[in-house]
Amino acid sequence: MSEKKSILIIDDEAGLRDLMTRLFQDAGYVTASAPDGAAGLRMAREGSYDLVVLDMSLPKMSGLEVLAGIKEDLPDLAVIMVTAYGSTQTAIEALRLGAYDFIAKPFDLDELQLTAERALEQRRVIDENRFLREELKHKYGFDNIIGATPEVQKAYVLAAQVANTNATVLIMGETGTGKEYLARTIHYQSPRASGPFIKVNCAALPESLLESELFGHEKGAFTHAITRHIGRFESAHKGTIFLDEIGEVPLTVQTKLLRVLQEKQFERVGGSETLNIDVRVIAATNKDLQKAMKEKEFREDLFYRLNVMALNLPPLRHRKEDLDLFAGHFLKFFAQEMGRKANRFADDALDALYAHDWPGNIRELQNAIERSVILCNGEVIRREHLMLSPSQTPPASVASEAMDTSGLAANAPLRDLENWHIRRVLEASAWNQSAASLVLGIDRKTLRNKIKEFHIEKPEF
Image (cartoon, rainbow, N blue to C red):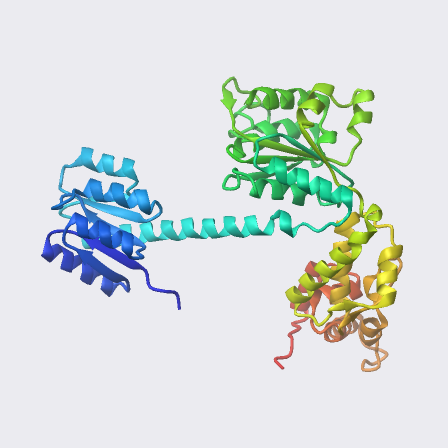
């Protein structure tokens, strides 16, 4: 059961104070009260409250003075002001100082309770967002980045140094080397961490859509522009925009990108209003931009604007000494996530890891370890669990049990055979749908549909 919310009532009218106290206590809240402004401010500072209901007219200190004192020390504490009828100007001043809302006397008790509930919900959202930001800051911390090779260490040191600045960063490396993870780490360790992190995969959008996606468009800008569209740069205001695969941006859009980097200004497609933005740009590419410039496919002036701080992430085949670190990290993570026993690699599995070229880099390694944890029923990951060869089949420990048809009549209908086989695969895979779909050669969505179609249920034991 969640902890009860606490409300501090500051009002010099004893009858009204008692009435509000009973209202909130009946609604399940813990309450405390003060008869004047000085006592109320002291209690707010010394206690731990989720909401303050504060009368505007108080002895010893005015309500506005108490509000200012609360907001100075406890800026996130929600405050509802109770004002005399017609004190509009004073109420506006209270909102300017940070009050959540105000209620004019005489007020309806249901209205007060509803306003209090909304204020507490806003406080919950603020607390939750702060927690999530702290979690992201911890997750994307430089101490969490894995890598022992000198080139990787150099990239991480430079990234840590540039994180606290607004400098544009260009991250270079093959697909799967961790460019997006490094970009997010720079963002969440920067002063912009509370702002948005907006990712754009420039290679995934055709030229006709990329400009509109980046800069937005006005209603009627083109045939299907039935409403105004806010672009990614506008959405990233006060935060970071991550332009992945920047080398795939066509020359026509590169010109507008250059202006944004130089002047921090742009217009939406089909619009005339010039918009000013405060955005940090982190770009990434797996393309040789120097070669692209020589071939007139990438603007030199844009390259030099992006290349303020260049970070290079080498491919996994050039950092084999990091294999043990990554493999151990992914094994621990997936074993905990799936509740599996796997906790170490057999020698043949380690030999296979070191012999593989890893064209997909860290992302491919992560997928291989996840797959091995799914297929391993014991504590030791073996070579066959990794399935690094495209033609490799699932381990016999799973596949042989799944293919045993001794329990089915030879003339059984195909539908019955399918039903029976799916049940056997699920049983052999300990009812792990990821492992079962791998053995069956179908995706998880198809498997879930089949489970529903055949009314297959996992035994309670």
